[in-house]
Length: 338
Image (tube, rainbow, N blue to C red; front, side, top):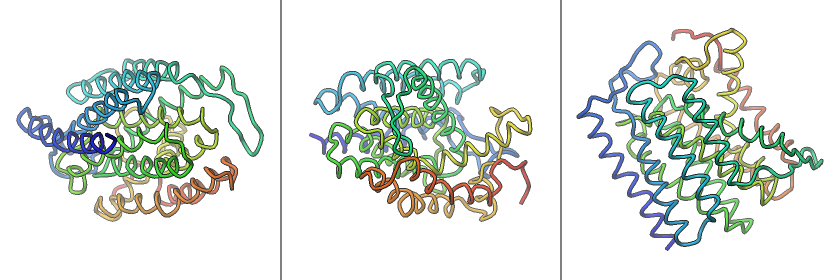
């Protein structure tokens, strides 16, 4: 049955992306290039809805066949639907940032309630019981993941490649450690994203849009937070696997905040955006991110998962070259033309 759910996930996503592309072209739902764009030709947008539907179908099947519990189903399904709906409406018009943020916080709180909060975590060998502070931090983490994924969805194939790399790496770690209860959601999310990736790999025939990027962000947050109840090391594993996006987005945000800029406005000052302009192409950047994920981040996450390295120490080791790279490619620096 797991095999047929996998086929359903990737096939439905790939098929629906094609339909959404046709719909976007007919309704003129296009991303028109402007001075802050990283593409040069009008391109259909909103294809990430296929990831949403592909994964939600898989989520329902996982619940029907007992591969996930009722609490995780409710957490992911409802939170994902709300975030995707807000993104879809924003893709087709405009929703004020304050209302979107309110919806994001509600979704995060809903999901965290059903997941059951965050138990103690271990930092440099010291177990820390966070209590209600852990709940607040988890909500902020989920909202940040949601929004950073939206920020990082700016060039062809990048956001979907990151999700596929992180989910497939985590699934392998779960399988190796024997955590079968955690195994299926990241596998099916990777497959649903792969169906879209077929259409989005450079040069993209359709863009993800806010519906897809926000959904990926909140779903990855929920999957990673659920894992903490099995082992606190798994939270560090996920933070390491998502390191490329976390470092670039966070460093860029902090630098823009220091300059007093409106962080919710569109810009082109992420490291990956500067890199794509320097190389004058999206493919080298997307492929480099894939290589970094599998060659650098995955081995460190694997060592942490096996308790051969403290999670916080592993995070510092993993992030140090990522920070250097982000600084080298001017993450958060006021935009410069190339």
